[in-house]
Image 1 (cartoon, rainbow, N blue to C red):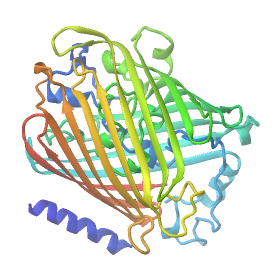
Image 2: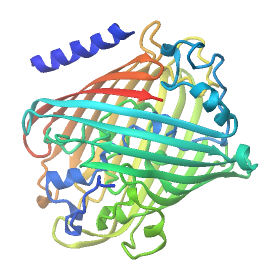
Image 3: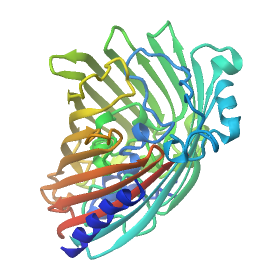
Length: 469
């Protein structure tokens, strides 16, 4: 146990001293029904977990009628040399001697971030192992109201390059302990979409290459966790998300205050046919040369702004269907497969004086629940339960720090050929230090009980550093 102790001592001292097209495999279609732990793990788009909610420029789709293309207020004091001191800059590269500010005024918003992390299997799993990985994300949002006088419309372009190294799955578990872990490396335009609001705030359409987890099944308070299950339930094993976003059409309606409903149709080429949609444009969406599979998903939800001591409470349910021909564990064939999911989130405590109208102020104590279910004749995951708590703003003077605890239980398929045991439990604890507004360090511990491959319970530590520029 000396490893975990030294790990946390080191990571606690650091802030005090300083104040992402080859990721998916060309899987044999016969493995679509996943028959062992290793193949099952490959079916999870592992790095979806917190990415849309937390990386700069990767905000998830609106869950309320709040429009698009609203420019942010510019900093009161310039983030440049000779003006505000660097430790106070919200972006490590500042305002580029004024050029960035001028671009923002013209409707072009650049965001970037680098996530680097080191993980080590302290005990259990398939053996003592460590790995280093990184994800570089660069994106541009074009406000077409400012650029081309097209009201309430925007274009988003996202470039990602990542290298996950080795050792990402050596804990022996089904659930991935890093949401940026992929097999190999990627360099790709991960997203390129057009979004338009119609009928005031009542209708939103997003079309193009989209990360589906930015629109469906995400839980905002779970954005700080790095276990992949926290991003979306692993029961949605065919999700077109990082590292394989896909071309699709998303339609959301907002019939009344607090309510929303969304449906989408995506290229489903990745799940069965092994097509790397993360590196492709619309080709496989408009033709069936490589695949004629589709992924369909829908979600309805309701948000209550304030309810007694609770606020920002959201409940949602969704369902999905993939049209591909899946091999079942029993050796047969399934003409399509699907599942459902549900989620709930709320803020149970907030600091005195916090303005509920300020959607950007997330300080407080949040709780969330998640559930997912899939067809166990095809899916390794029969159902999954998740629950977590996160605190944004931890101590006096540490309003940008956060901490959290998350528990996920995966019940595996009862089909004998699945051979994954009964269930796997994953517990995650983290504390994120905001060294400066643009530099964050996160020590993270995860415990995996009853790992899918039958190995000993595993303890995994991760040290993550994120720089926003």
